[in-house]
Length: 245
Image 1 (cartoon, rainbow, N blue to C red):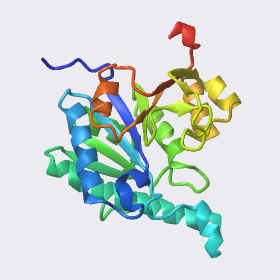
Image 2 (cartoon, helix red, strand yellow; image 1 turned 30 degrees about the vertical axis):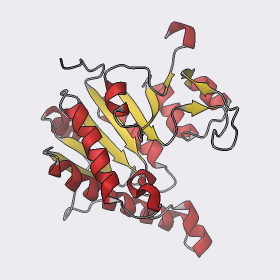
Image 3 (cartoon, rainbow, N blue to C red; image 1 turned 120 degrees about the vertical axis):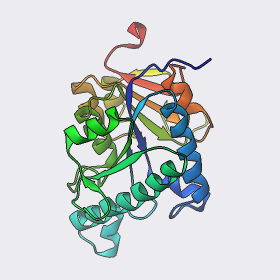
Image 4 (cartoon, helix red, strand yellow; image 1 turned 90 degrees about the vertical axis):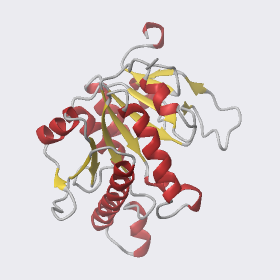
């Protein structure tokens, strides 16, 4: 019996590091296949999928300053890294039988369509997985902020941020064994506690537009399917207080 999805349209945020796998740099083909299989599991439910991918497996704009590269230039280099990841992910998804489009905030017509909001929505309505690359197209904005912005623009029901940990904690669980995990937290609480799972601009955009956010562990096979079908996986960030959720 096929499960019923809890969401019609989602925005999945992937970091570049998740495509690098254990090698820590570049793209691991096994990780591409893994992500493609996870996405296929929810496409088979009829869920419309948009993806924003980061570029940290190749370059981070902020670290470019250590090489004497200006921040704005470094950020543009990071945007180009996300285009590389988007093209690789597109190929992997198509190998699994899915129809895709790469839409870029930077104009690179040879490899991607320009991001146009109505076009992105139409692609999703037709069942294509839309991979949105190059962040917002502007320096000084993270791909987390880009993911939330694209989620708002394409009218998704939820943004799902895939991470290596099983939700949001009040401290880094890798460094603090006693860190507390939240099942549900409000945007106001997340901002007050200065939680680093996403930057403040992304949290604020979600709050102002009443867009739910789920932070979950992608590396556990089947978790994306579970989140989409309504299982309480990871941490839900919402405008409402916990007792009203």
